[in-house]
Length: 291
Image (cartoon, rainbow, N blue to C red; front, side):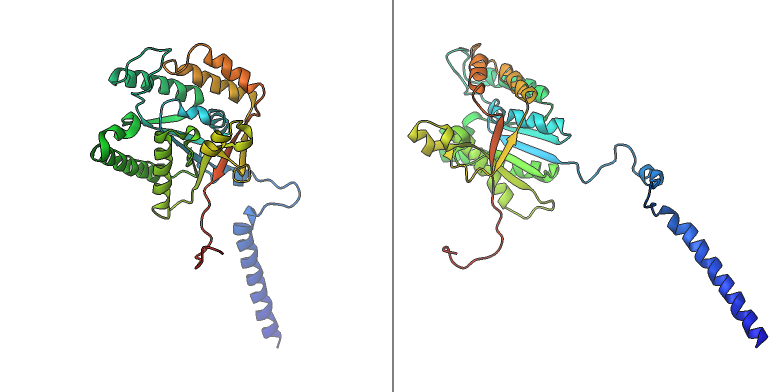
């Protein structure tokens, strides 16, 4: 009996030693509840390492200067550390007006490409300026337009697939100003997003104008949205609005010297916010249009 007790005592000592050793190896990483030293945990996160909080925003518009619709919030997200890509689909070669006297064509397209780079530099975004013709060759009829727009759709798909954005901002059905290129680019982006389930979930937003901010009843119909649809109101600061003024100043071929003053005068009474409508994702399959 005495020998049995001795054996049991020896086994107990060995077991206790093993437990203490295991705890020494694994429990040292468990933080203390009071005044815990988390140095070891912090050291495992290398400086500059990717984190789950990093976001990517993709803004896709038709022409050089279309970014003015959302310029302050692009600046805002850059300030917040978001990676912002700005895609401009067309070359703006037909953007003629009285104040500049410039002629349509390759020369104007080159000027507007340089102006667009100036804008992107002020905003701090990465510019992807595509090479599609202004008006997307619509004047050339079906045979001219269709290959052009199909190529654009495939290129937009490639961009989204490569960039893997968390959010996309583009034009909605109103096209902001009813411009046909705006509406076509917005429809292109929408179709590409709808064409598949993306590996990384993304949210699609349309920039919009609350109808109550538009005085003309006809304009309300053409490009206004009731506020109940515009469920995102992204505010910005005076400094970010100033960046939008710098963007406007880049587009000298499109805006005269008085344009900036008119914009500032308008902004005196305008709230510092951009309104967006989120594309509604389906939540399930229904069998009636009245559900």
